[in-house]
Amino acid sequence: MFLFFLLALGLVFSNCGTEEEVSVENDKKLAKVFNKMLYLSDLEGMIPSSDSPQDSLLRLNALVEKWIRDNLLMHEAERNISKDLNIDQLVRDYRASLIRHSYEKRMVEVLLDSVITQQELLSYYETNKEQYQLTNTIMRCHFLKIPKATASISDAKKLWKKKNDSDDDYTALLEYASQFAEVYMLEDSLWSRVDDISLQLPPMTISPSKVKSEKRFSLDDDNYHYFLEVMETVSAKKIAPLSYVKEQASKVILHKRKFKILEEKKEEFYERETQRNNVEVFFD
Image (cartoon, rainbow, N blue to C red; front, side, top):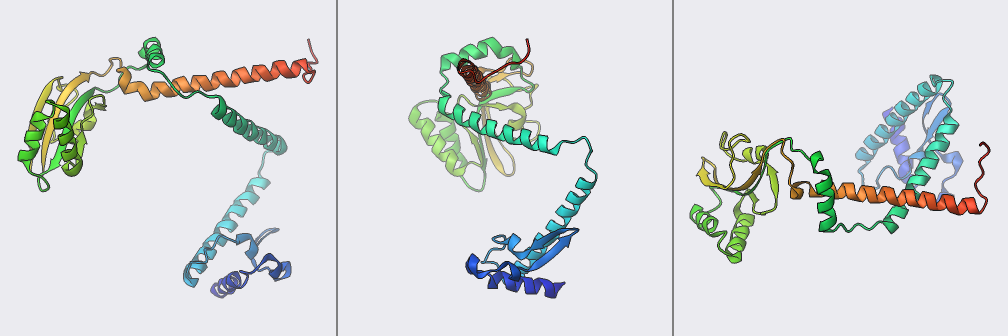
């Protein structure tokens, strides 16, 4: 078996010329499953020329073994196929589906307005906000987790204390955090699950049941300095704020726009081709 694949591998590299140089008669048989034959030319381009001879041999062997197993499975599938399974109809349906999907995708790309105004987003949210009930308590917060070995705690405390005084002080803390913090969250509008923040803190520091808005503290353990300011919380089973579900709501709005475009185009095509007598109905 090894010698067979070694000879086949040699043919891989000897047949690297033009197509005219490789005749069908010289093609190497690699494997056979019932009446199906695998030739070396069938694997053209699947073995990189950059591979070493040993790697090429391993790759060739793997390709042949996969081909054998795939075709054995296909043989069993063909033998046991349901007699009432209309393969030709399934192929036609699948082809039609692919063509239709490709055209719809291209049409939507041309016609879809992807800009969503804040007013449109707010209007959708107010109408549908009952759908956005929280399953977890969330909060807006500022959070730093700083390894003790990498930074001066005194600098961190000074910057943390002054972060709300001015834009310059906030920027200074942001630059410090990006350089030294292992984890940091300093965006006012960003909502996070309390459980997710809790995982970054020492055990039992906060939990959904006891976290409170406008809570600010710092603490240490053996490895880290932690700074947390909780600005706002929304409990589980309450309605999620718009800023928390903005991305999800935007996707729904765009999906509705896509659906409307497709329905309008279908109606347009129907009216146009009916007027051209390209549509006929043969029952009342």
